[in-house]
Amino acid sequence: MKSNGDCHVLPDAEQLYVTVTEHLLHLADAAIAARGRFHLALAGGNTPRRLYERLAALDSADWDRWEIWFGDERCVPPDHPDSNYRMARETLLEHVAIPPEQVHPIIPHARFEPEAAAADYADTMSAHLPLRAGWPILDVVLLGLGPDGHTASLFPGTGILDVQDTPVAAAYVPRLGAWRISLTLPALAHARQLIFVAEGAGKSEILTRLLRGPAAGESPLPAERVSNPHTEWYLDAAARGSA
Ligand code: 6PG
Image (cartoon, rainbow, N blue to C red; front, side):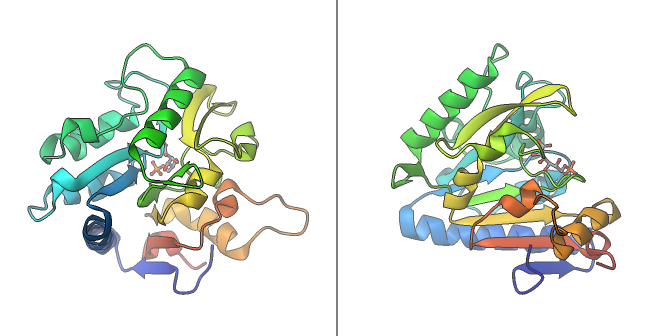
């Protein structure tokens, strides 16, 4: 994580979400002007809730040109309280006129098998997204940051971090005792733009660690293994802390 122009620190959470919303709209306008579509992969967890609610309040977006993807998903049915799709549906998708066929949940059915669901999603991405050298290209991927340095469902010590031949994979996460499905590091590397969003004092410790970089002999955290020259960080002052 660079602490130069790629890192934007806003005074508070409200300004953070206003700024990220405006930036997303700008990126959407550019993508739609250039290619007629805006392919956005949503982050899960709690941080993006207020961002999605703010997006939903907009009346000036070309929603019929937006296409919604997911950076990762818990292996639960789409109406489960832990589902990232359910959170996005409740905060954004139910409130805007994005055509349903342009919304791609990772787990569309209650019955699922992680590896098969991941393979299906990779096929769906390749069928609907522009390809570059065979890789599906998302316009923007929104990413959160976990206290252990994970992002999407790329958790420390899990095999998915070494997947290089597919944009989506399933991973069993021992510390959660659960399966996750996630975009892989090469999928993130191929995106046109990555936007990390972190808010609140609870993120200041991990951000301090990221800003410091790995100590000698320390393995880089998953968020540090995300390698894309078009990566921006948006933080509020509480998350940035005294780092
Ligand atoms: C998920 C997310 C995950 C999340 C971080 C931060 O499915 O949980 O994709 O990577 O972004 O865990 O979560 P919070 O925003 O809830 O702090």
